[in-house]
Length: 279
Image (cartoon, rainbow, N blue to C red):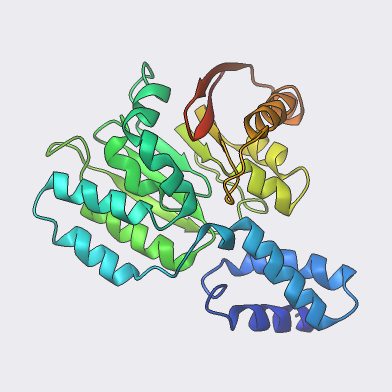
């Protein structure tokens, strides 16, 4: 056992802000910080800073998941449940930014695809709450990956609670509480959702975006980038992110996977998206 690393894990998870994060991720980031910091205290602080960049910055406040689930369970009808989902998506910065375009985002980007019967949602946040807006097959299987265990427990209950496509649809799914950089999704899927995740992963670890894209086993990938920063700054961001995307397309993922990529670009008020079809 690596005693300093386990002590760091204990120190970091004493904070409620980091308690639900996947331990493997904390250990991996903590090991890097222990190797380069002068003291244990600095390593703990550095690990927390990295975790904030990866996920913590997107939460304005703690979420009462039992209360959120109770609201969904007691919804009088499908339209009420959809409105509750909208309310809950406001609690995470990424899904909150998508709310103004939610009615068109999935309908536009996924239009014309064959029936989508399997989805891998990478670094999902609260995005599975948007399933009612996605044009998915009635028998879809939905895999949600994230680092927050308490949120994933809520999402697993949500997946077991709701149907899609009105009264006829049904969604089955599984949540995965893991560090996707050291253990990427392994399921083959019709669609991978990688929404505004690549900049965060790359900020945490150089080369992470390329490695992830090279490992995803999906026929279609919906990849997106934010139009502005969390602080509201937008000047040049779309241009920079688009350049990053094309660098990835022309670089490691395509070459490593041996796949040919067919790409469609979409620009929305709050998000830049690319639908990648592999062959």
